[in-house]
Length: 461
Ligand code: SF4
Image (tube, rainbow, N blue to C red):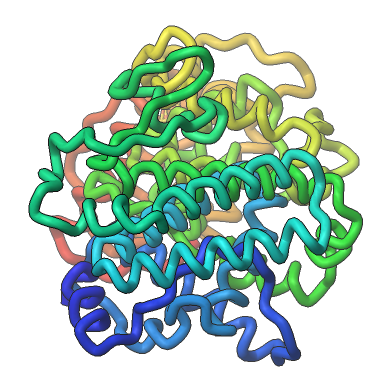
């Protein structure tokens, strides 16, 4: 069932009636098992939101009933992840704002009235309890907007006949630009003396923008709160995050061939050069700059989406680096730099170039230093190291190694083609007569096509 239809049906049954900005955390005691389910179901819901899926699991809706304890627990748990992870921060803001949008779209005048009253009351309670200055400012502004919307004329007008949804400008609210960056970035709204005039036809945009800003400010504030840091570092919370966040792809791009959690499984189709980099990354949790660049581009070109690439590198670089690792940076220290670098590769930063993975000739022409790991193994490995690497992939197949090692002295690419044939034959039980590739990406795509075309069973390396 489509997610929008589900929202329709829920509204008809009167479940989604009180919306919230999640100003207040849940109260009471919740057991770990329930918390785990809240996290799991909300992440699943994010996936469904992104896909507007036809395979929606309706069971997760009990965790999404607005402002219920389970709904709040799920939201605040994800807030903890968003505060720890720059990658998830973007996903969190996007999905929570989209969730509010879906909820708002199903409101009638009475629902909106109740929502604004509740928002007004909770905001005042927060101000009474005491909040930091940056939050105080936006909460004060939320109270101002709630007062304005609750004024009888505004509310009656936006649901009345006189209000033409796409054109009406009868009522407007001046919003400080810092609370509505999403409204000005597309230049659809005019900025006058630091304020944006938001007409009644855009009342939903106004609330979404305020909610987005509130979450953004709150998440930045969490960095300075000892209580947030303590909870986020709790071993039980860390376990939940590792189990669910790092095993779920939030990507819904139809061009995505696989998600980051399947990279290990996909590595059985990698050419030896990329498999070598992947194994180094797995064992040391780091790659040197140029190797990371090559491996990232390779992953991009074989179909890893941007979101999954960010999550993959975040997962790897959040772990301790090995003592022998040439890179000692961590995601925690340099997340902004890494995110920028990965987005750059995907053509979203800087010169916005569409970078392409390099061909075999490039890898074979490299002159490697003693501690460098890139290059083409059929060109750069010593005979002993190449034999060792092959032995890990095809144990006890010495007759193949001798041929490959002899061939690589004549032509590294021809030796790689022999390796390709042997991989198809020994690991996938597929006989391939000819192989034609001139880059690691072509190797991977051709391998998958050959294996897929013949429909053989796959075996993990
Ligand atoms: S020949 Fe090309 S694909 Fe094969 S290992 Fe060398 S660089 Fe990689």
